[in-house]
View (cartoon, rainbow, N blue to C red):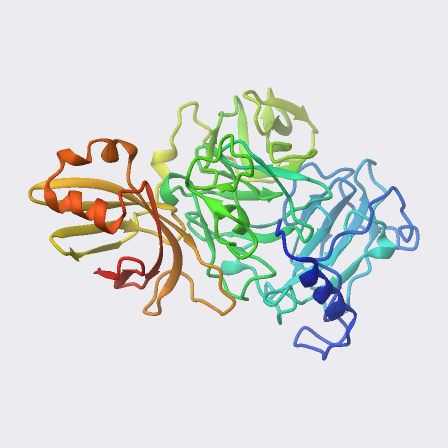
Length: 489
């Protein structure tokens, strides 16, 4: 995904071939490459590899975990040393060669990450550069500093938070084919893929993602587990599946990106109504939630990794650096497997050791809840929403009248926008696509409620389980467009 139109792809192709004025990144970097277009047909060719200089620095024989100093895809392994990037065939031990980098990057690379057919490198200012055709032979590789709206042609972006805890993710038709929603329906990945940089903030409770087709800001977020309060020590993402761990070795995974979330209404159809068994199913909302992974029965560090292993959204392998009976290596398992196995490497452990307790301690690493709550009168009914957080998709909506209380759910996903938005909530309204859900049990016994609550559900919500409405939120107000109502903080 993104399932963007062929016309958009044609526009991107034309822009890639057109001359462009040099930007701040430097005249020795191509302003526009082929990143964002469908990949060339991948093959086994190594054309151009032999032209690269053999590495003259000491490098590991193999890269086992994806990170920002060493990373891999199905075809190649890459490693970062002293601002330079080296490459070898992933299936072979050793054989490293020095990559040819644009002049503005050579000697200045501080982080790398590859997934599928694209690699991202960042420099000292955390600026993002993208290399395309990373599943193909070196002759096809090309770089661009373009990033952001429109169509990956923006003036560039940076990794959020200035962190080194970031990762690159690509979901593609060529490699993944399909992904599965919460109704169990498989949806084809679009021609233009979906590519994100995901980044973890300082206390590990916020994950921000930047998509090269979206505005060049840091406004889009994915909630961490436990309603965005889980504090992760590390993050790894591949093919839109994120993997996090806290200081006690509690691990979660989640399939999530801009399109899966429900935000891309221009190209996709979504529904909160049950799509199981539908002849032409829409994408089921809400998006898949975090899945709590089983504990590892041994020593582990915060070096975690996820990579794709085949087609479909379950084709992923998790790896965690650690020890077993004194030997160093990594623990591994398939995404849906229930048990971990240990793969010894006898290489030095470089991550920070975690307190991997046998019991679940996810609740021991929680950030403070969101401070935003909104209340107001809707006729004879008092409504309260909160705590509300930008990245949390489901928030309690409580109605009170005549001494009774009715608990509904407000579903929100970030709206599609092409202009820059500040992170979080500010005095400027932020658009969310909203849906008010009335529990089926409430509808079944609606006549048992008092006249005020009964009238609200019947008259304002049409006695429907799901009522769509745009929701505009600031740090002081929440406005429901369809209801014509504003609540205040």
